[in-house]
Amino acid sequence: MSAPFAPSEPVRPSAEAILASVPELAPYAREATVLEPRRGNPGPRDSSVGGPMLWPADEPWPVCTIPDELEPSGLPPVAMVPVAQIFAKDAPGPWWSDGAELLQVLWCPNAHRDPPEDQADGSPVVTLRRRRLDELTDARVVEPAVPVRHEEYGFLPEPCALRAGQPIMDFPFREVLPAELQPKLEELVEATGHGKGDVITRVAGWKLGGWPTRHLTAPMDFACTECGTTLTLLFTAASDDLTTAVVVGRFGDLRVFTCPADAGHPFVVDVH
Ligand SMILES: [Zn+2]
Ligand SMILES: [Zn+2]
Image (cartoon, rainbow, N blue to C red):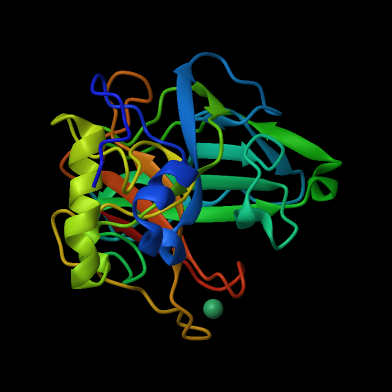
C-alpha cells in the first residue's frame, strides 16, 4: 500500500480516504459523533455532562434501589445523577430515528457488585430517557442530585458543556473483521498513527454511535431480549479525570447498547 498520509502527528483521515485505502471496510462503517466536554456551567437547555436536566413536571426523578457495595438492602433509594443530556440538534445522526429529540443518561453513582444482567458489574446503574421536546412544555429544571450513598471515585460527573464534533465514520476493532482484512487494516492503522496509536478504529472519547473498544475481551454481541436483533452502540462515557472527573472500570469506557429495530426495547450496559 502507498503512504497517502503525511508523517507527523496522527490526524484521522476522512472516511473517504480510509475507504479508498481499504474499500472492504465499507460494510463496517458506522456513523459516530465525538462529544467534547468542556468544564463550565451548562444550562438546562444545553447539551451537557453532569448538568441540570429538563424534566417533565409530572415525572418522578429516578432512584436506584439495587443493592450496592455499601448497602445490601438497596434502601433507602439513591437519587440518580445526570450523566449526559444531549439534544438532537447538537448531535444529529441515526440514533434519533425514532423521532426523539433529547437523550438523557443518568446513573446511580454507587458501585453495584451484583447488578441485574443488563447492567455492568462493579459500576453505576444506568437509566435512559429519550424524549420529544413537546413532552417538555411544562418541564422543570432538575439540578444534579446529591447522592445519599457514595464512596466510589469517578462516578460523579463535573458539570461540563458538551460540544459535538463533526459526524465521522467509525470502524471496528480488527478482530471483528474477516481474517483476510486484518493485515490491510493493520497497515492503514500503522501508516496513519505514526506509532502513537490507532486513529482509525473505535474512536476514543465520549461519543454517540460508532464501535466499542474491545481490546481486553473478545468481541461480544448483545442480542435484544425483546426481538433478538443485535444491539448497537448508542452512547459511550469515557474515563477522563481532568474534565468530567468520570472514571469507570480501569480507566475505561461505560457503554450503552440499544436495539436498532426499536429504541424502546431494553438496553444493555457494559464497562470496558
Ligand atoms: Zn444504586
Ligand atoms: Zn429489539
